[in-house]
Length: 161
Image (tube, rainbow, N blue to C red):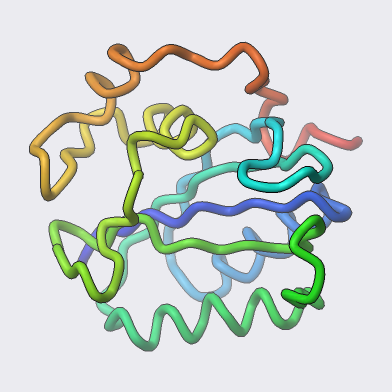
């Protein structure tokens, strides 16, 4: 079994989208460890704030099949890529064990540079070691400046209720 990390984000009916994503992942995997949910500004476009979280699962599913599953979950929620300002659901494979594959974007480029990924990642996997740099997640978080505009909302079950 390989430990993998998945980033989940949405800025269009985000509480519902995150719940759907986590439920779909729990159907697919035996164990899903969820971070808290964080609200932060969109990156790269003028858009509504995002809700983001990271989940950790163990699997023996190969990367190509896993990516197809993640895309199917996105599509099932109604994700389109027509308007970059709105995203119903974005599921990003952040890391697949220790696998390094530049063409396959593993680990996800900028993994430790994106606060909306790094902060929830450090919450659930502080000992995660970046396969390229060897840096521990918690050390990267300690070295990073926590952005004041990233705010923890709490556990998914408690938000929007």
